[in-house]
Length: 206
Image 1 (tube, helix red, strand yellow):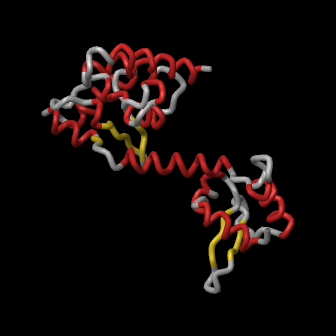
Image 2 (image 1 turned 180 degrees about the vertical axis):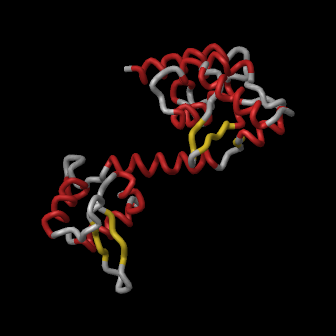
Image 3 (image 1 turned 120 degrees about the horizontal axis):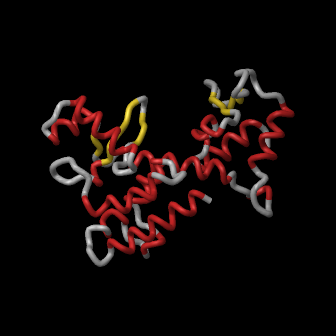
């Protein structure tokens, strides 16, 4: 494939926007619609040889290179979609959580940090700050009691907090398609959710 064909292929797969995040060369279309590829480290235009190398690398997955899909980029796209969905769900900053709890922002910040250190609250870094996903909290802004034993193994494992957030709020295979944090509200299901969390944490620890 030449540069335009490669760009067309990636755009057709919906993967063009994820090249830079993967540390790969990316492209921009000029006024004529021609793809201009650039090296991520130097910003210099890619040579014909570099484009050929990129083409081979992106087509290396699967038994039929001509029809292969770059799995790493597909995974990045999926992660981006999941993050966008999570970010659209209710969350708290220190300030909004402080208002719910009826305390000062400094008090809320201190309490959040202490709870996060104990693995007793899911706190997710984002844009230089943190977010506290609201699903885990009760109406008073405190951790739902049934989630303490679910969060602790996950947050003290090697799992990324975004992964923890995603697992707790999406249908989980280990739970037969139930959403973990919702299933945990049921006294009969709560032990199963805790067991699934422990198993997932063990996998993360390797």
